[in-house]
Length: 226
Image (cartoon, rainbow, N blue to C red; front, side, top):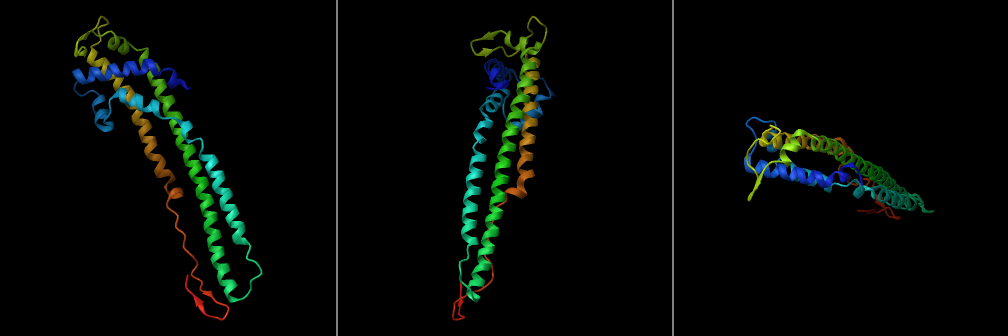
């Protein structure tokens, strides 16, 4: 359990109330929440719940998978390295193909390491994003805006669509400000998430095996087409 988990219950309650207020009354014109809503296309409460669902532990098995793949590649490489006692033109041609396949296995092993490192980077992004959102939520939960939102009068249809609570802060402005702070944090995390695949693209591209072009010859000098 991390800090975000500890704040989950009050954060979901507050951000859900913000969602209801935004749906009922909208936000003040030209408020900074509008471009965030248009960009992310998600309400603050939904964004909080989505972040709560992100777990870095889900990627913890990547290192074990990498170790298993490397072991398999090593065993296959050992088989390829043993060319036996066969000699002659055909043996030399087959050796060229073995070397090509061994090189491919070496590259596969390197890609396995890169995949595990990418998974570790994604797990780090999740942990950092959850912490950043937890800091934002800790601030808004103790804010005057939170007081305004939680003390707003309610009717049969839910939170009031407008009004000024005893503290003097308009409910629409309070809800929009809380929502904007949450969505700004989520937007920053989104930017970082988009950058990760681009940063690792060269290491994670599809790897194709290209067999050696050396002809394989029979013992009598004839050619075998592979």
